[in-house]
Length: 448
Length: 73
Image (cartoon, rainbow over all chains, first blue to last red; front, side):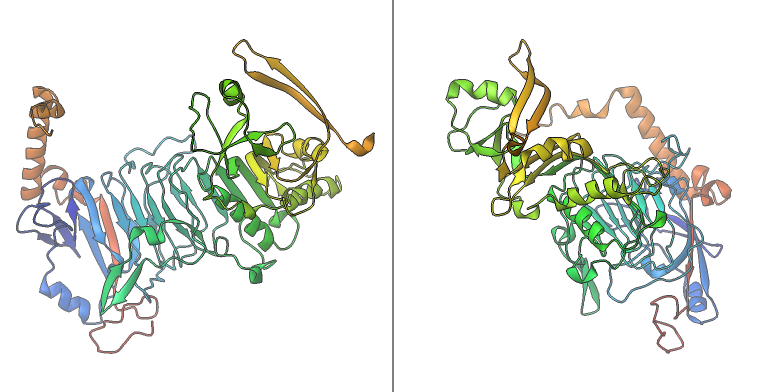
């Protein structure tokens, strides 16, 4: 089933035989694409058992929107260089028991970009929305899919994919990756909001027919062995060497991924290092009220204290704009599970790793796995995190500045239960009334 | 209220409209008569091509072989 870009005739070449559709494509008549004719002689040869391959070519390939489901062709070689109007690429299948372990040589989607970020001439696939490579077991390389910046769906379960690079800001909402991936890199993919904790099932066989489940049921990020982590996997080793999430919309999801990858980590040395770069994380149920928002009577607000805790907001209305201007007022998002983070153990692990590693050895959790022995670094984590330790031990407030503040200077740590410190806060009051924080020094009580 | 009164604004100016009409009409004729980018020569065929496999029961889940034997996969 082929869908042309406009109402064209479709011509295919199968093993050098030419086949053309009897009529031009019409979307009203063929909503799923126009069937391409196949000659009975080709089929007979195919079924004889003596033929082991079939070559297919398409005329006017830059005017084709979809080639339909190619999974039953069991491809082992494909070229797409100038198919710039493709909307989807379906080489694998969601059918249970389907597999294609043919050696894919080459499998070229032509979606890569040059080192400088420009798209290779003629390879633009800016319209591409879906890629399905499920059960293509011969796929053991990495894929650069940075040119389709409208990509929404990428699925490659049951493959040996090493990693996939996506376009910054691509509206990805469904990404399924196998256990063989070594890098997870997502930059500003704001539509990727859900984490799938069990292996997604996309379709079922019902009376010999493939029936797809609703898209909502398999939408989200799934990484085999990471998002479906169980305690039994602890210390079993992980192939992942790089976690890079910038401006993700996963909420606590990116913390869960980080925690699971660290829990699976096994072994030390250069080959087991983990590079962590997580920018603008949002690991908190508290949502800052933006300056300019009105105070709503039915909403419960919280005030961020100087001791990095939240308390119910009870200021008089006349302070509302001053407080929101300084980012002190928050609402609580009850859909976020704050029990995900109840202590600072993960941050403590990263802190100890850096500080307890002798200077002539490399540390394990870093922001650059290529760094040299004398360049031990902390992971890069920035954004906001809330430690829900109301029922746990109090966190020494001075540690937030002297310890974690040094390791993660751009991470704002808020806690539920704090052992408060003496605070010296230096601010510059701007003409607008906004307080620009210059420095904050926390001095532990026990120090006198 | 839905109105089609301003629909003309969506089609661009007359020059663009005419260009698209002619271009798409020529592409349509090319697709029918295998001309231009739809030619059978390398110009058309170099675009999309792939090789499918058949009768490989061990490396694919293709079980429908004409020899009536089910594949190992």
